[in-house]
Length: 312
Length: 275
Image 1 (cartoon, rainbow over the protein chains, first blue to last red):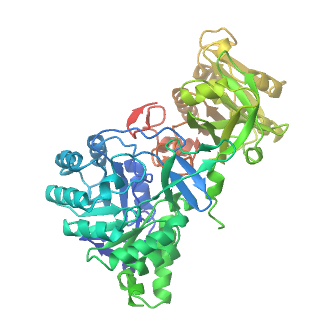
Image 2: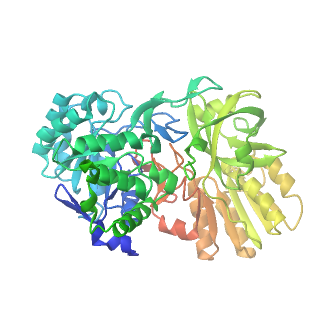
């Protein structure tokens, strides 16, 4: 798969097992970021990602919102891209052109059980290693967190998808709910194989010169280092409350961020905004840094440091 | 925090200082923006036409007496609005983003079509400053569609530099398409480097001609963009993100994306559509 093989890419110390999947490194590409073509997914894998999550895919093709859809703030980005995607059928066809066996996880969104059940026949033949349910997007009406804030609905959707596909199913949760732990528990009880925490935080920014909200959708999701402490807290709370693995996501752009997530209880981390600030080398940079940390602190594997902060 | 310059990815509100009539419908919009002054030929900015759209646009001027400029042709809500703006109206600008042309000495050929002429104007200036011999093929459908002709004439004013105007209908300059002019030039002159910007099918033809003669090409491509910072993926050309790896691709990269270049792109739903 990869041409060069720097130590960090091949070290067995970095390898993790999550929900039956073996990843050569605990650093993944987060959903919603560049994963809209097979070339870009492949490039992330070639750059050291242990697995990649696609953009969120829905039942029908859907255009993104009118620009501006992304805007920088002091310590992160706001985005309301609006779940633009070519639809499950077209996207599955694209994925079929890739080598089988690549660690690709397909992110899915829907407005409720109906949408998901209509996608299942197509998903059965989609060559991916697992699915991540986006029950947490904060900026599209009727989907994402509007589905994912209700534990009963989460339970319905998860059990339906689990029955339909014979692959690991992760649930990506939002911090914009009463209790993220309750949502994670509902997902676990319904058969989810893992939790990805967290999605972006619902947010807004206004241009003071023109008095206008910058995003065309007015509201968007805040990502980047601003939300990392929130993500670390959620990972900690969830991982101490459920038995299934947790994947940490939110503001991870360097190795120390990743180590913090692992110590909080994440079995792997996802990188989104870090790709904008660091480019594709973000993956190898994090992997190499984790490896150095393991060596300096006398650990044999990533798995040994997962959740170490829980003992205090 | 250092190394995390996300705040610069926020539109800066600037006044339109001048909206110059380029063609019947196209305009060149001048504005003052500190960051754009530092751009290099070929870089682009995201221009926010408030209430309509935010679009990637190559800078047609970085520092024209302290002003920067973009040249815009109306084709959708955002560009329509930009073309209707008057002096004193405001736009948002973020960037500059992307890579820039690599100026080379020797005998160089610039091929620009439509509003694709824009980034080649500051480039031709830089090329002359470093001592290159510049031939500029400036193409449009009709005499009325030629963009930035005044600027080009000012810069390419005397030999050894050469401005060749090409129109589809022969209403100005040579009748034909830009690649025809390039073919005939390459038949009689030694060219060390080609720079191109314009309709992608035109650039593809120019690239194929250059490949026959093994002349290196730098082509500035255009794609819809949402973020311009390497996140949305909509500007993908093969494995390249045009906002970060481009907008200028060199011959080697163009060969690597041979299937896409001049053929297809992603739309705002991530569907593959013809360019």
